[in-house]
Image (cartoon, rainbow over the protein chains, first blue to last red):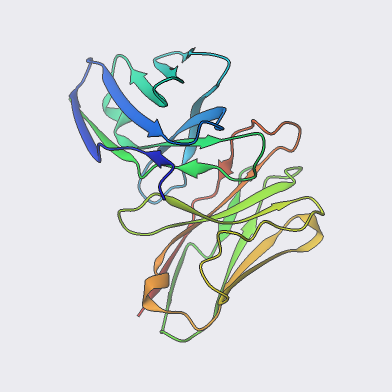
Length: 112
Length: 115
């Protein structure tokens, strides 16, 4: 069963506009959430994280929002740049387990 | 380098052969994970090592898959009698043991193709 879901396999955005990538999870025990970015032929690289005690974490152009009641998190990229074109994975874990659960990814294309 | 290193980067082999995939984690990282990403899929957890504790093997898909971690550092993932459905990118990641809520650092993966 997929405990972390990214329902949009792809997203296209114009350069300079906002990109919003969404992620839903089912396990209420998750309390640490991450976003990774992946270019072709490379491993995922860590982008930004948020713990369940917060509802927002910001790092430059990247902001992650967490809505625990809805079991939903989103990644906002503003302004979007062509170099942001990549596959974005969300992941979740809990302090009671060893595993990180990953979504299936959203391929973002930023159009110049 | 300072990152997670995986070898080989690509491996093509015939069905039925055994393969070994290697992972060198970041120095000082005692937590090590193996994942598999099949075409169009997310990252599938395979196995987790933490220091000298018994590994969490709950994600291994069959008894043809095994992994070792020698000396708490280098890890080898072995797939015996490979099948075509084993074709995937195998990713290794390591993380710092200081806190449980630390991000993982990934290698670039081994792309395994079974003919």
